[in-house]
Image 1 (cartoon, rainbow over the protein chains, first blue to last red):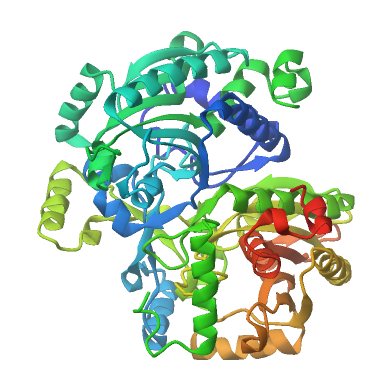
Image 2 (cartoon, rainbow over the protein chains, first blue to last red; image 1 turned 60 degrees about the vertical axis):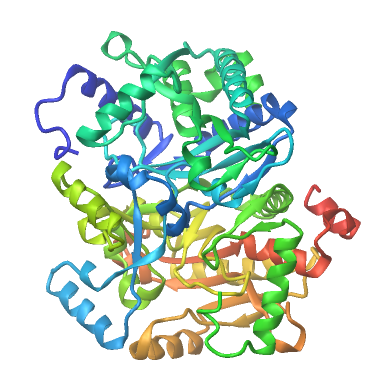
Length: 313
Length: 313
């Protein structure tokens, strides 16, 4: 991990490393050679399953259509978003070997000699799914029914951001409740379910707080997008302080008004023919589980009875 | 899909396409522009959840250690296997953008002009997980306890093999029960739990059959590996006929004696200091669900009562 900490670790990084060590020592997470890539223990998965069930219940009144997408999705759909413009550094495109026997022997010879062999790989038709709602939009191209549509999504997201912070995984599950409809209804949805989410997470003993936030848009051009997003209050994160006074808090969920950002790209319209708007409430499953472990300790048996009951532990 | 069917579809391909159409028309699967990449419906996921629970119960007596790995794992671990030698065409390596503002503007300009922009991407530290047991082995490097270890794994695998056959997904879940121990104990494990698995799947009304099988090793050199695997009876697949007389059957699970193939690569030893052997019993979750849909129909309510009870539907 030393290649990431270029200087002596700050007090915050030290606290993050200490939390990481605690997770590994307790067996909750299983370390690998890559920061942000971990195995999960059976106990960790019990927390995830409890959260999943709790969220399903809390959002049940929406009557959402359940859809599950895999961790890769069509590159053609990725190209219709502006992800490679806004977050190139977080993206993950997939290559494979599509050549013949002779080229394969060349690849193996290069590898045998300790050389890179990526030159023999070619881009495939898929990329890693960055947010689990991205694959949804291509399936909605066209006109939504009267009243719009609400979708219950869950699956693995990928973000290429190696970090010592165990809260910042490269591959993680998210549960998202997405509403696609008219601008007013979408704004109301975002605000209502943000409040519900804050209350729900607070019942788990987490010191949650809703704060205006921005996505990590890339580079100099991204700075303007960040300003606009903050100014228009499009993104609200639900954060939990995990490292005392060292850090204001880490996001475990967010409620985003995407307006027509993705719906226009995929030509999704409301029943009256206008471009639809969309909003989502998204929960980081691992992040929420980790916030619970940080708050209540590594032994699930010692968690407060009320929290255990809510999570079916 | 026409780019895959180079000639007029065979009767088998026609049957596969018809099954695919039935899955899409019923809403069980949601199509995308890429063959083998689908969204899953809520009903489909109810079947998957039922299978997961049934398998957990059937293998409970093993007392397996539960571990869950994400859909990507360290490239350094991938390099310790010979996957790129044996199955280059199925692999998936991940690239991302790791350069600066100027290079990003170049990428976007090329993209704007309709050119490929992969030249600006660089290989990352991760690859797609091809089999969900692959990430396990790096975590076991060293000496196993007396009696070996048994592991309950579940997660997404990736295989780059676009196909019109809905049974052949590019991104799919597998549940694997892996045993690592002495050669004799591993062979006994494979044979015993193969029998259990065949019986279990038969109770779901599937016309299962256990047949010797081989992995799809790449190229001319791979042909010898295929011969050896068959001759030594290392891989047994549990197949179900889905297309009448047109095809002998599609694998929905397999039981594999891997001998020291991966354990030697990761220097995993038994308590007596010898290189351990490993075997796994692996279930294709989507394939099993699809075999059930093909066998019992698209309406879960109309499935036989006994099958519904076993799956908690």
